[in-house]
Image 1: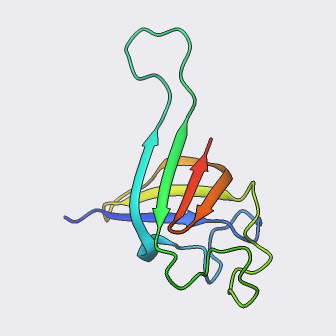
Image 2: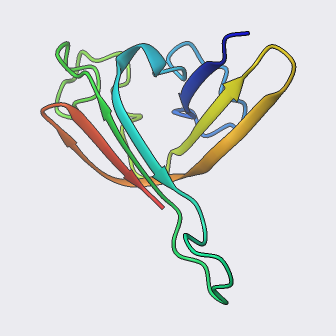
Amino acid sequence: MVTEWKILVDWDRNGDFTGTYDDVTSYLLTAKWKVGSRHAYFEVSNDNKLELVLDNSDKRFSPENSSSVLNGKLLPLRTVRVQSDDGTTVRTHWQGCFFAHRTEHLCIFCT
């Protein structure tokens, strides 16, 4: 059974991740995330962190591109979700809001 991964961004901030452009998986170049404690028996967990690099060759993720389909939506505090679906269960592995990005290749840093 093949596991399908999805990277979703709630550009409209409506909580449903079903907008036309919310699924950015096809633009994904790399993804790294960390969740909670990295060592057993730590009393305090580490910050959750997600780093995405998306292909921005068409400039759709560039805020200065006024003709982008995402014009006006490329703002901080958009919720990002990383999910997998193995055909039986959909799992959310990471969810948080992005606070910064660079646009050569879109890099999103979230906590």
